[in-house]
Image 1 (tube, one colour):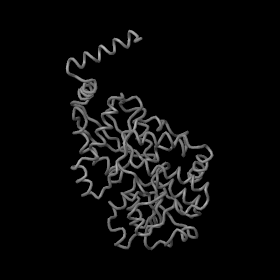
Image 2 (cartoon, one colour):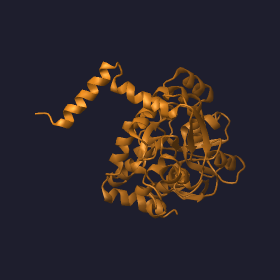
Image 3 (cartoon, one colour):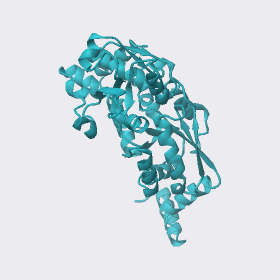
Image 4 (cartoon, one colour):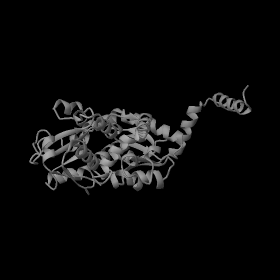
Length: 350
C-alpha cells in the first residue's frame, strides 16, 4: 500500500506532466534560471602559459554555450603548492553555488593519499568531478648535451632537473624513478610551471625535467625530435603513448621487474589516467553538477573546440565526471601497504 507521502509525490509528478513540463525539463529550467546572467570562473591551479592553463582557457572559450542559461565563463590563475592552493580555495573559501570550477593537477587529487596529508586543507576525494579533458602520458627529457643519454646513464650520473613545487608532477615523478629505478636525479624546485621549467632547460639552468606531459611537450616544443636540443629518456606510464612507443621510447611500467614495484607504479601512474581533472566543491547542488558535467562533455566533443585544439596541437580525450569519480574512489581504496611504499618514496624527496 502506498504511503501518503508517496501518493502526494505521484500526484505532484502527474500534475507536472499535465502542465506539459516533464521533471527533467523543470530541473533544467531551474539550473538555467540560476546561471543566466552569471559568471562561472575556472580556477586554474598553475601559471599562465603551461599545459593546464592552455586546456582550461580552451574549455572556457567553448563550454558556456552548453551550460543552461549560457553564463559567461572566465579563466583565472591561482598557482601554488602543486595546484593545492587552487584546490583548497575551491573546497573552502570560494562560493559553493556552482560558479567555481577547479582545473587542478591530477597529482593534487592524490595528495592526501600519497603526499603529506598534514599540509592539505581539503579532501580531494570529496570533490564533485566534472570530468577530465584528456588522459596523459608523462615523460622525462634532458638536454641533448646532458651526460645521460639513456635511463642507464641516469643511474650512474647525477642529472639536475627543474621542478615546480612539492606535490607537483615534476617533483614526484623523478622521485619515483629514483626509488624504483636507481636514477640519481637531483630535483631543483621553485619554477612556476611547465613553461618556466622548459625555459630553464633551454637556458641551461637545469639539465632536464621529469613529470612533463607529452601533450605539453608536443605543444610547447613541437620540434622536440627534429631540432636536436632535447632527448626523451623515458615515458613515465604503464603502457605509453602510441606515437612515442613507435619511436622506441622506453616505458617505465614495462621495465619494472618485481611485482611489488609494479603494483606501486600502477598506483602512482593512475594519475595519468586522471589526466586533467575539473572539479567542484562537495556542497554544489546536484542538479548544477549534473548540468555542468553534461556541458563539459558536450564542449569537449564540439567541432569548434576540436578545431581550436587541432590548431593548438592540444590532445582531447575526455573522460566523464562519473568515470573520474569512480577511479578516484578506487584509488583511495588501495591497500595501505602499497600506498605506504609510494608515500614514503615521495616523502624522501621533500
